[in-house]
Image (cartoon, rainbow, N blue to C red; front, side, top):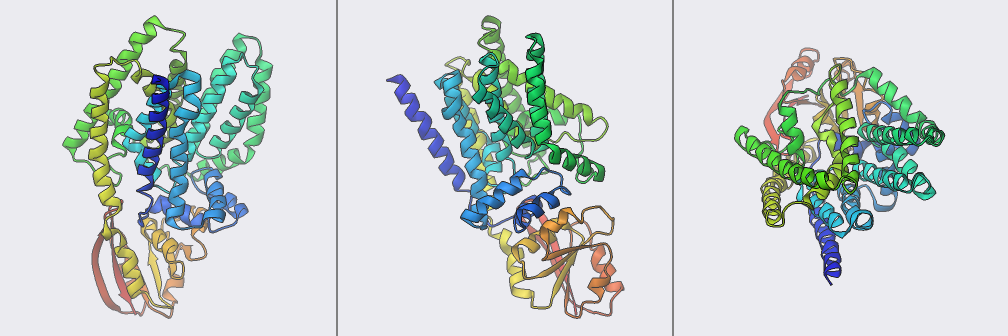
Length: 492
């Protein structure tokens, strides 16, 4: 009877959590990263692969999202539902896989914790790969473990591991690192048991299947696109790593924290991790063999995070948000450890997690659904006429207009000469990337200069080099979602 009740409760938590995520799918706001996803799926599958080679991520997410839209359309709701689908599948792994391998309670805690972490809701409603990637990584780890436990004889687990490893690597480079870490641990096991030939065959299959992925990695690394904005501040990065799952974002993200509240959340996160680790250590001392799955997960996480910290000594590549890719692995360890917590302390920890979730989700929902997020769309609809063009040197602003108003001709001015033309073909034909303003100067119609939130230098530049006169200057507006500030200067 207890097992049956736990099964019913597990399914209820899974369904209720999924419904809760769906309530966030109706937001109309976008930010730059999401606009890139919206823009690139307007191209065919071959062009998606070619264009994404100029981006900072592998192409699989965009390809799958494109296929999804062929059946369910390109509305923002549909695109967000794609992310929610894989969030639900990831949380459901606790029921479909983990309860079979590690028991009903660990599976239940995995699903429960997944929905109690603010990070889950935060990224489930984003049109990005941060729900697909962790699902693929988690499934890869599950089948790698099953293959390992079978004495390297279970062919189904082996092939499923290979499939999920390749798919994950084609979704995000942190997933590629995860595949590398799991393969490394399998190599150590194979060498110990004198079956390295088997590992070499699996490694060859993965490497051969990832030829285009290696091409993307090399070309993207050569362009250094996207790495310049990553910075690492010690010891803050340690606290942000621990608090990321509970808090759901980092200070520079869209729901900013005051210095005091950030420290409070950091402290609560350290407390939560400390309690879990403490009880896991107590369990590990008495049950080495039973604790092996959690130890293996810690080894994988340690290899990945250690690798990126080491690389970051040369070029900063460790970025807290990318840990979302590893959320399934981290949640498994926490679920395994949480199951060992004293039964009198466990309810208090659940209340703590639920309280943090409420205090994080309420402002997030208010921000995402704020009517002020629509003011840029309203402005464009009410003021931009046929023949008008919009130019800006802020890709974060002009890209949103490009994907939400495809009939309006837009220009992204790239005076720094960054090698982004290929990547930003994702926004073509409605947006064109230019390195000089001659085409803007030659436009016979009205020119709207979209000033970014750093300066109005582009409007001054356009004004100084054209015979058009200023008709009106619109004051600065603020979009709450990701705090985008902008203003318009109309030239005629």
